[in-house]
Length: 502
Image 1: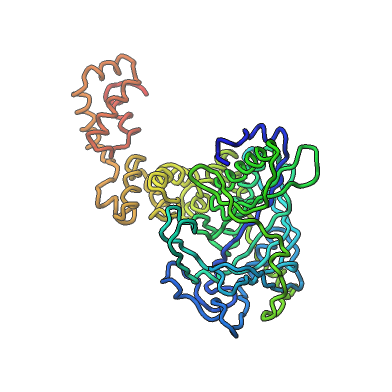
Image 2 (image 1 turned 30 degrees about the horizontal axis):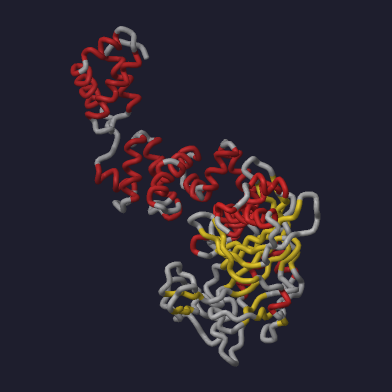
């Protein structure tokens, strides 16, 4: 089915009610793997971070990563889950070339966290509660690279390369209960949920949750049922969606695709699907297995996990302020609208602005620079704000120089440009480029006199009462001083010398 074969979104919702299930995999930021001591450091030589345990060699015995368990409990608590008093690992059996043991060590019927919820805020301020089925611990697979084809997929490739460095990386899989009642807003709910979950994971400090790097990825399960009915339809599962926008697009596309198939009398196949960024479409992957097809059974080489209640409560007491509550507090403190706060959140600027204010900048100045000049640079260079080579402390120093009158906005932008270019900290850039505001009254007076003399006709208009014409003389002075004069003071001097009240 092509994009042009879809029914319209409005027609799909006129006949069908979407039901979603979202499965989010979070790669934990531990130093070692889930069941062995191999490093989790990225971008190392292929197969250099492996051992008999993560390669699944006979006789190798796994040991659970304590920080991985702690991270799972923190996530469960932040999601309002119950924490199991006793749980265990299971073997999920299936064959993939990038799963060296031919099974994945995971959790099945006894997850460490279960029965929770996460409240998410939609763009119009509505709060939608997403029920959480479970959060469980498991390990990642290795990585297959298919060589010789046009698409990077196995179809058409001449051969494949396997790198097991990622095999055994700790994962937490967070599974929602069926999400019902979202109606036409289902794609928006999916995006908002993953966004809120990402902020929560980052706030807990258990993962950087960078979707573009695969540290957090979402499987979008979707089915349709005729309006007014209760029985779920057959679901599809769009795998490994790695951006917020793509989560929303994948859900929307599948709603339209399912509706087109059902409306034409067809049958939905329970299968995995691949998402395509270029046009927002999905294509078939493989027939989706049911749980019984994985032949789960308890992992015999790992003891059960039984977190002490005292430990759980200690972790609960150490949880940070949760993202939605923090955003609401900051919104009030900063005096910004819900729309502006959403823009700040979408830009990934909340923590940067907070750090800049902590470094001494007024919040309005911190917002101005991060959401203005720096956001523009990030967009132009295709980077995130947190990837720019400038720190909150440096931005705060720029704001301080502006407040002190040493820089105006134009000069401040040049200072930021210099810092981003690697010319040094703000004070060094100011010194090297000679960017301080001209504050010498004598020098300013001379520049104003020269501008008046060179623009006699404009000066006469100002004397005649057309004060707005002073802007032209201000511009001439600013040009003469290379933008380094205080424009407000220049205007005052012009009016004083022409005998006009401002």
